[in-house]
Image (tube, rainbow, N blue to C red; front, side):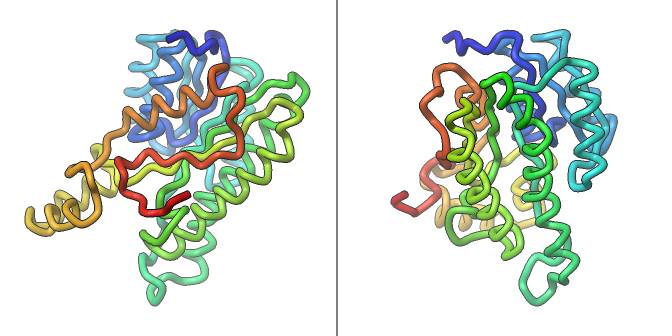
Length: 258
């Protein structure tokens, strides 16, 4: 299926592994020029090599998008090396510091929101003017099922819910300019080095099986490829009537009716 996005230019934050890597690969396979960022060079270089198997015009940029300077540096270098940005995938996320309410400090909350929400806000602010001027843009923000309903750490849950709310507001504001904004809410996706991979490595098999039986209707953890393919579709011409949506990719894990 031709998604109609050959030659489009994309930024994927946190693109060296996991969901970001898979999103970048899906876009590169469709003929997009892709800039990915990460904080560490080794994984970044390996993923760029994979991307260039599909499109030579893919680059890796060292940047920490949890900071304002990191966002500006990523955007500036991506534009300098590839051109004006048509698509943005805000994938960076996670919990910083304490993982329960009693142990999380004010700084942990601030850092978690900087990583998940402020990185999304700042990168969106940078790409929007050009998208509005050209009257074409796609922004896909990676949230979580735990941004839609109960689960995860309190700071992560609140930050990911904020990403969905922010995305809805921007989507409706810029729909007349043909800038489409959506979120994807993945479930418990396992990939090497990710949190669910660590969970399976650090717990006895019976605990892992208990979690799966209670929470994952398909009987296994999710995997990154369906998330990447959903990202590519939402960036495509085939999705030109979809904006303001929050789409679960979770194998039925979420319990909400909406």
